[in-house]
Length: 58
Image (cartoon, rainbow, N blue to C red; front, side, top):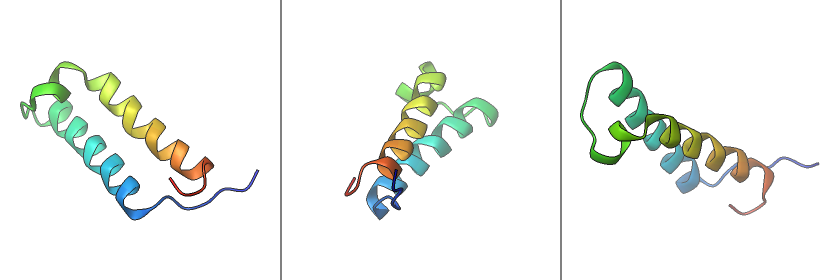
């Protein structure tokens, strides 16, 4: 299995979603969708980054 680095945009989307989730969880920042679904948002951020490493061109 050959792992490839994710594209910059994919990495940024994943990092921003993860950062928003962390802000919502630990800094009590109210972000409309993220605050209600913290576990789902962090799972989506992680899965997006994992898929980007596994699938070439994502």
